[in-house]
Length: 396
Image (cartoon, rainbow, N blue to C red; front, side, top):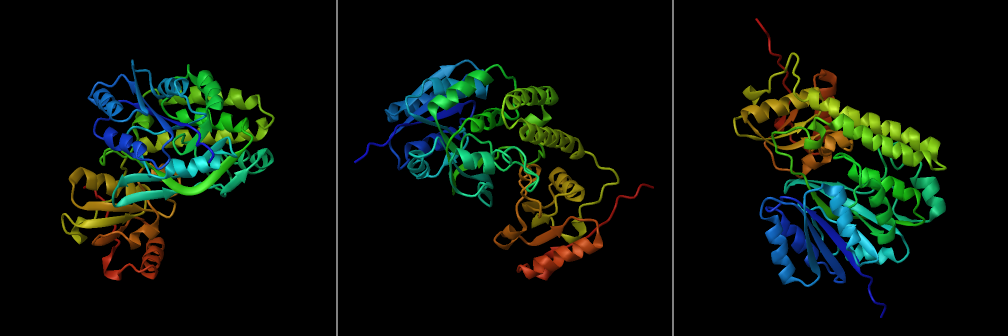
């Protein structure tokens, strides 16, 4: 029987004492047992470091590195430098994985330099978004990578977004390919786009990729329910750090034979990132605000909010401020957009399986609201559960 290749699993750890045990145990209990688990404690100030040491005593496959705080790029690189496996992967310390994740990915690794799969966005047990790779599953040699992945990976006009998810945690890599890119990235001061800075330049040099349409990784969304924007978007140095990322990728892409199409994609990526920052300001701006229809809903009722435009954001923000109802689901037909997924927006189809008392339609146009109402009835939502009310604040 052929000996299974060693896979090194690197876990950057920083102040995650609440979630760290579940993360480590999900790796320890993999059906693919030939793994090395490297826990890199990035100067945690809570009990995370102690938890790492405790698990090291329980499993000889676990090694722990304690170091001063340097951020995720250098922390991941530290792990890669200590990895003994021919293949390397990553798990964020507040996430967890399916028991057979590495069994499935390593099965495809014999023929591919990079293997990638899908991801679950976990908001809570009632809101889990499934994200499969947008690129068709299968094996891609260099010719297919050039024709079917590189032209669309960072931005695709046909999708209006990137087609290749940059997350390092849903992929396994040949170790030697990673080391080069981590070394080149080590001086970058960025919080947004760390995975982006590595994955897209690496793909340009990759000769074989296996894409699997399996969701195996759970990404925990930890933003507080009262926050509409991720911390790195609110970072006061967001634009400075975004430009550092842009400049780095611009330099890498300019050296490529695919320069023209890559720089086009990079421009769109940059503009979309700026758009995320603009949305942060819009989240708290209420010009002529519409009142959340409390007169049609009992206090404490469980509701599903349909619509994530300006009105939907106003309703959400008002309800979070006054805690009138419990919003168990927020849906929009454009749920696949990255800015929607950051706000835990799901597909309208998930309304069919969730439990709630009302669906509140958050659109201003009467015709649009009526069309949504009819579509909801068609998919099985009881008509008496559907609410659409619109009343503006009138200043006297």
